[in-house]
Length: 99
Image (cartoon, rainbow, N blue to C red):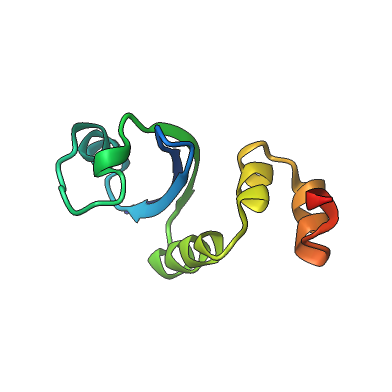
């Protein structure tokens, strides 16, 4: 069964990159080696895998990736730490943790 992975990388400049792939190991190597010069991570290497989730449905994977890309940094960090309570609070009241 084909799987798809949605992932979050932490870049050397402390930013996050969110992506999706059908070949996780190959894609991470591409990020690390700068295989695609036009990629966001090319000048921000090295990168560190902070989070990933596997899907068997490509549509669900794409929707999840797009959702994460729209999130604040605080929500991404909550997801990375599996802090679903904080993630829920940030979804309901985004300024709660920025005070």
